[in-house]
Picture (cartoon, rainbow, N blue to C red):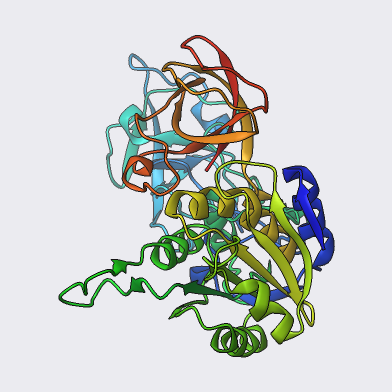
Length: 402
């Protein structure tokens, strides 16, 4: 087991220890936010026919020659076509068809005149504008043609991509990267669930499990279980064995430091897990641990709330990314100008909660690893290198967007 390693080595060890879970298919209504595992080709032309982009009259451009307000041209209206309908007759010389937006264009026409340029007469309409061939004419396949690439592999399915799939009639068996099922195991004799009333003396309400459940949900994980257990190495080992058999990854909080109740040093050997590393050179959350139990990753985070939150972002998200094969689950890194100060020196690498906006980052007033309330509204972690002195406004820092 490696100890006291750099963050980048820890991430490399995590991502190099697991394989992507493969692919699965889902329905269109379940695909939002998922990542395409394979490219998707268009099964049809879109639009599937030539259509009108406006309400007006479909006609032959040659029949509009010389038309103006002073010299309107008269055409016989031989049919009316609404969206979803089909013209009963083609357009011949001196004729037109009344047509609505989105309707299929009749044979024989090569342009559409907006209705505002007519007197809307019937059975004869006067037109007051001359058109050229293919004016106001939407071609079949104007968006995409059957067989053409529709969306490449790796596309994150946002609202626009969902709309594209729907426009092609693709609503089932969409190939996506399989996301891991994750168990969250919170440990500690002092921790009780938020619903316990009244709060027993000496106890605290546990926030870590709910925080991690919420963050996993925000990141698109759909099968998550939360469990709470006391500081009993045998019971923790039994819970881990059960959860590793049911889930693709287990994230734990608490019990990884060097105190009498830091029971993972005993629970993991009981489980027969292979401990890959313990302690990472960062603050907060130094004494985190990563293990494998028959191929199932176990990421054990500090029990301090902000430490658990920060190290999940820095190490949990790369784990999720490696398991799913989705690079987009990792944090994005940017440079930002600091708008506030931080009075402490940083002998070791430190991560500070902050709010990033338009190239600037603001830090809250409190940063202790046991405090959670000052994390509310934050959207980044400022990465402060080892050996840094106090921070002043105007300095440039790297931030990882949450």
